[in-house]
Length: 150
Length: 150
Image (cartoon, rainbow over all chains, first blue to last red; front, side, top):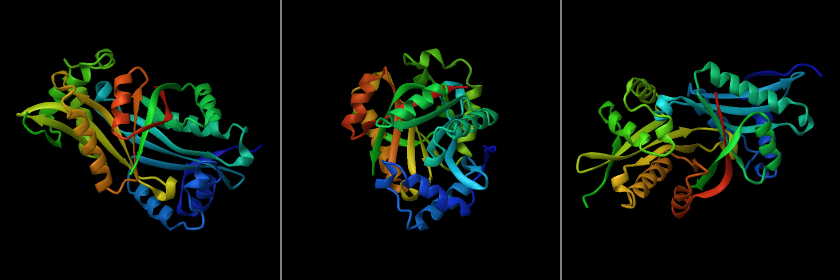
C-alpha cells in the first residue's frame, strides 16, 4: 500500500469530504451531499480562521480521510492552549488500514507543534468502535460530552 | 439580590477569574493563582481571536462567574457552525443563586445570535452535580469526552 499524504483541504476536496460525512449511520441523517453550497460557504469560514485546520488524507491521488483540528487558547490550566478534533472520517474502503490512526497522529503532532497542552474530542456514545480506537491511541474517556441543538 | 451583568473580560479581571479556576477540586491541582503571567499571555491570545468570547458575570461590582465561548465553523451537519463552552466557574458564595444558569443561557443566546446550530461542552465525569445542571438547562449527555495530555 502506498503512503498516505495528509494536506490542507481545498475547495476541490469538498465533494469527497461531504461524501464521507454522509456515508455514516449518523451522518446519513444530517448531511446533504447533493447540495454542496452550504459546505462551500462553511469552507470559506474555515479558510478565514487561522485557528482552523481542515485536512484530507490522500492515497494514490484519492481523498480517503478527513478531520478538522481547531486550536483554542484559554486561561485554565495555567493559560494552556488546547486543540479540538472534529469530523473525523475514513472512507469505508480504507477502514482497518491504519489511516484513521495516521490522521489522529497527525492532529496530535500538529497540536504539539502549535504549543497545545491538551487534545480533546467527543464521540457519540453509539460509536463504541471509535471509543476503542481513541483509547488505543492514548486518549482517556474522562468527560461527559453534552450537546444542545439550536 | 441585584441583577447580574455579563460582559467581556478585561485584564483587570484576571486575578478574580484565576481565583475561581483554582478554587475547585480539579483546578486546585493545576492552576497557579500566585503567578498570573501565563494567564495574561493567554488573555492576549484570546483577545486576538475574534471567535473567542471570554466573559465574566458581575454582581454589585464583583466578578462572581466566568466562562469561555468559542465559535467553530465546520463542514459537518450541512456546514453548521457550532460553539464550545469551556472553563465555567461560579464563585462559591454564589452557588445555587442561579448565576451559573444565567451564564450558560448567555452562552446559548450568544451562540444562537452568531448563527450556531449546536452548543457543546464537556464536563469531567467526577462533576456529577454539573451534569445534572447541564441536563436541567436542556443539554444531552450524548457523547463520550476524550482527552489526551501532551
